[in-house]
Length: 194
Image (cartoon, rainbow, N blue to C red; front, side, top):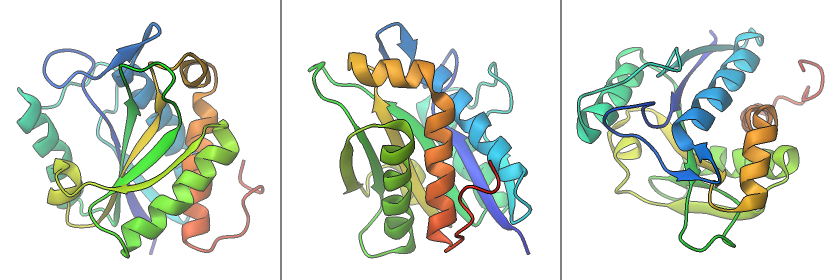
């Protein structure tokens, strides 16, 4: 039975729940592209089934921030997905802050273990700094999903070096998440499918 993974490309391209901006990049554009690359990798792998929250760059979910988040959660819960991966980009008023982090609802869970593997994959494949797995039970998509769920902050749009990586190598970020997923499941054929 294939493993069902729901990829949530964070934020909307316009209207409610748009994302952060920095160095000429918009979060919602980066998350869409990385999510689609990740979906392609997973679709080529017969061990997985995949769905995305935003199948087109123009897809807008919900009429406000809350319904945008609720729609994403409902899509995953009703499938039902086995795993939920929400993709985001970070921002900070301090442009020197950089790196990748992954958020989970609580420690010592399958989500925490998955998050650790995804973070290792991002650092290896995209060349970002490891900012660790962080616990944030207030995040809506982590609280309301009924499956193992992680929220991935790829890198900082507001950091010039991170922004360059996000703009020039979205495939590297997708590959990092994919490799992390493979390692989480104990699949050792990391090079054979790409």
